[in-house]
Image (cartoon, rainbow, N blue to C red; front, side, top):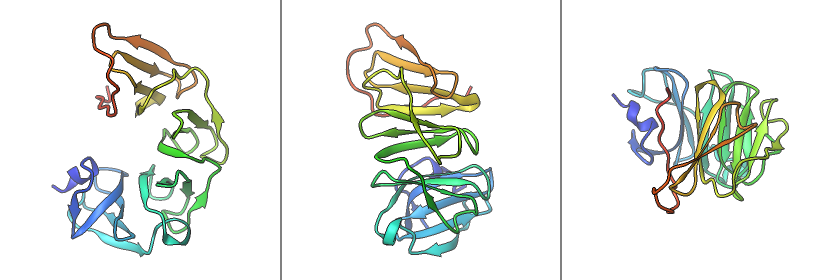
Length: 193
C-alpha cells in the first residue's frame, strides 16, 4: 500500500517527490509535488492523476509546505512564505487568507482552525480562515502543536512541558513532567484517542 507517503516526508511517488499531502478519506489523497504538480489518488495512493501543472502560489514561485482537505471541495494550503490559501472547489482556485508568517495549520471543520506563526503565536479562526485572532494563554516557547479529534490540541516546547487544549485553542492547561530535562522538542506524535 502506498498510503505511508502521507506520513513520511519526501518519499518518491511516481518519480515525483511529494511536498505536501492531505488524506481526505481512506481512498482519496491529494498532494502537491516538488515538480509543481497537484495530484490526486482515488485508490489509496496506488495510482496518481495530475490535476494541474504549474501549481506554486503567486506566479508559481512558492512551494506548498502544508495541505489539508476536509472533503473533495474544501481545503487549505500553506506556502513556504507563510501565506495561507483556501479553496472551496477542490483546488481549482485558491483564495488568500489574511494569515501571514504561518508555519503550520490545521482545521477541525470548514470554519474552525488554527495556524502557528514563525514567532510561535497561535491564530484561531471561526470562519474558515477569512479572519484570524491571536489566542492568549498559549505558553511561550511551544514549538509543535498537533490536533486531535473533538477540537483538542497538544503542544510541546521544552521536554518537561506539555500543553493541552480541549476547546480548539481557546484555553490551555500546562502539564509539567518533572525530571524530563530541558531540551527543546521539535516533533510530536500523539495517538488520536
